Length: 297
Image (cartoon, rainbow, N blue to C red):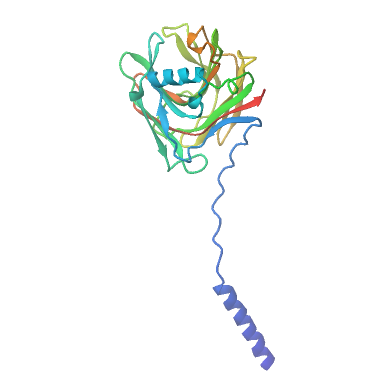
């Protein structure tokens, strides 16, 4: 009988210890794994976690960074820029900082805690579209040089908004005698990947469909381009969402003529942003992890 009591006591003590032992809280659901970055030399990866100062591009700032770069001061290369402009029916582009707004958002991010919120206001009368983009202007000749580049960003379009041509872009001015303007975008309205080209219609430029995607609102997607400066007439456009990943090869780009402002100043301009079109209401989207890598010399 005594042995039986001892066994019962041991069982009760064991149950008590298990009951009062602190319990580990269940781990939260894991976040989607970030896309593996391409191998190569990273020119920049803008995560916005440090709440950076972003400078609006103005004609005065543009002239200042160009003048300083020609004198060997490349402060503009490491600056976070926001370029806002408007396009006339003739195709003329004018910088106008009043047509969009920007803020560092700490409630929504692809990775980390922060992203950039872009707001595009209505297109003013007399213009076809407005353009807003985070920008990086590369002027250091040791960086702006021939090679194969991958550049892109993650975007998020909230339901209820329809910004047109959510895009990433490069303007290749390694020589002043001609420039290659590569703009690839996502059109949420038509569910298509598009590229900016010269048009045979009323307007001198248009966004031409390249391929179809299954676009979804309220989720992050990645858009990127792989571009070889030695073969600038063809390039690849990549699109990745939670439900699909596609690669498109195209030869749709805009060839620009001589620009004396780039004499002695090999340059790249990189962009991640969107457009708004005439007659559309105010638009909103988010951008995160804007990056450029040289993946081959």
